[in-house]
Length: 65
Image 1 (cartoon, rainbow, N blue to C red):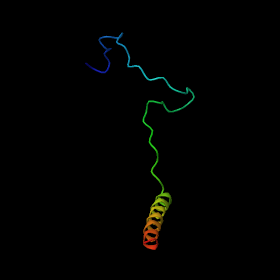
Image 2: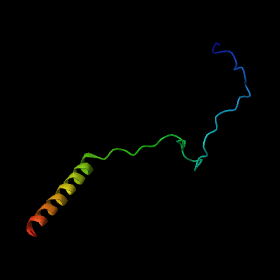
Image 3: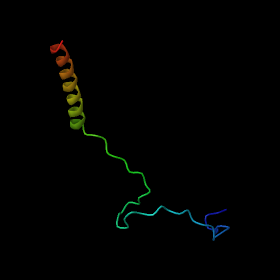
Image 4: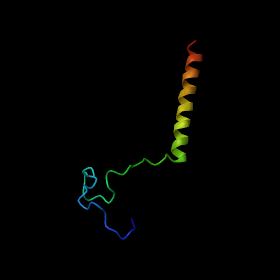
């Protein structure tokens, strides 16, 4: 079948798209959306917070024993 021939069944049903929440959005709602990765500063903050919390648990355990 060449690119200029019409399809065999022009009445074939088209795949339905899910309803959109808002018709004013430029991006269709059925496309996957991903959260951007955390910045280096935010990642460093969470690692530092975890280390401080771990240090507090260890030092508290040593102090109270």
